[in-house]
Amino acid sequence: MSDINPIDKLFTKDISKEVFISRYNELKTQSGTTEDFSIFENDLSGSIDLIYDTIDTNHDNNIDEGELKTLKDYDTTDGNQVLSESDLKILYDKAIENILSKYTSQTPQELYQDNVIKNKIKPSVIGESVQTAYKSQLACDSDTLQQLINARRNQAFAKISRFQNELNDLILNHSNLSEKEKNEYRKKSNELTEKRKLLKEKEDALARLQVKIRTKNNESEYKNNKTKEYLTNKVSQLQNEISKLNFDIKTLKESQQNIINKSSGSRSDFDRQKKELTRKITQEEIECQTDIGNYSNKIILIDNVHKYALSQSSNMSEVVQNYSDSDTAKPFTGDAKTLKDIWGKGHPNLSNGFYNKAIEISKRIGCNPNDLLAVMQAESGISTTIQNKNSRATGLIQFMPTTAKELGTSTEALKQMSPEQQLVFVEKYLQMTKKRAGFNKDEKLNPSQLYMLVFSPKYAKCSMNEAVYKQGSLAYKLNRGLDRNKKGYITMADLNLALERHKPKSLKNA
Image 1 (cartoon, rainbow, N blue to C red):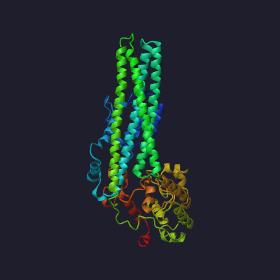
Image 2: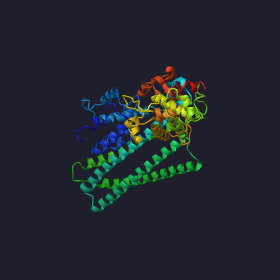
Image 3: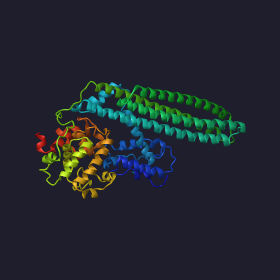
């Protein structure tokens, strides 16, 4: 370890998860640590984002001063409020404890009732949209547990390899075995190492396949029964290979142990070291199997809860009220003059070319041009030059500096463009976020979906009454004016109503 503490560089105020992971990867390349519980070893690196989620208690993708103070309180080794890796290990263990505590010995039905009906969800939104949010949480927890399995397996492999190397050195270099016996031991040791490597590869492959199957089961993605049958057979094949490898490893260990038992050495601590290293290998194997078994059982429980939630979905209709006229993409009939007649009074400087281009873009995006103009009205008042003094978001849909760069321009360049020119980047952005949100190229967008592609693209496929931002998060705080009826959360329906308020009266009265 370097004398410079990497943890203080990793955790700073106002850091997002993306920056956190990027900074972690930079520090990882600079680290030469070999400590068992180093954040730069396999036990933590496989699920480093889990640590961030544990610190980010309000889940707003930002570490604030209060959360940073809580993090500093984990400094338990010397009390100087400087984080060490052993402090971070406590945080990591707490993250594991938190997720495991969610899934106790309750039945799937009891867990569903406790999370959806009793504790987590407000009665005013009980329905399919609420279940969708809960199913997303289940999927996230399942993914995290799978990360923990992978990380635990990596940790065990590293520790057992190290213990085995120490044992090999003791037997081959400090024992009284004959050369023939040492050669036999060396052969068994090399075979054991290769079998353990192969076992880890097969277990990793099985884990990836099980995640793939679980995702398809949860989202009903099987295109045909042949695909399902193929994946099921592949799982069986890997399980058989793993079973055979475990048997081979057990046999090799027994043969190796017979040779170890015959060995003795001139060093006074030879027998003690021999027994201790053998014990450490066995203990790590048992503890790893126990931990992975525990995580795997939680995943099975989560899968069963998800199946129960799916069964409930078919018996409930989604609660969507007062949006029958505006929750679908209405076709637009007219031309640039029609559009100008609707919007021109409030924006006399917009050219016919702007309206023509808005119609062309809307056809390619799959939306109503009135909805597109309403989004720009809500974001900027259909201005190319307006800029948020805090975030520096600029232009028609308030391009962030990082977004502008991704689109091949800059906020300063956008400010110099005409409305018609800036529409080119509006389309580029919407095409990009539509794809990322999971829409098909030709899929039509309703007003709230279109607005959400600008507002927060990852929620664009949510249903109308799903809670997008909840009270307590920074996102809710910044946008609480959208919360219709002060429910304590913002939905797609709230966003839809906000967009309607930005349309000209002629459209509202139509």
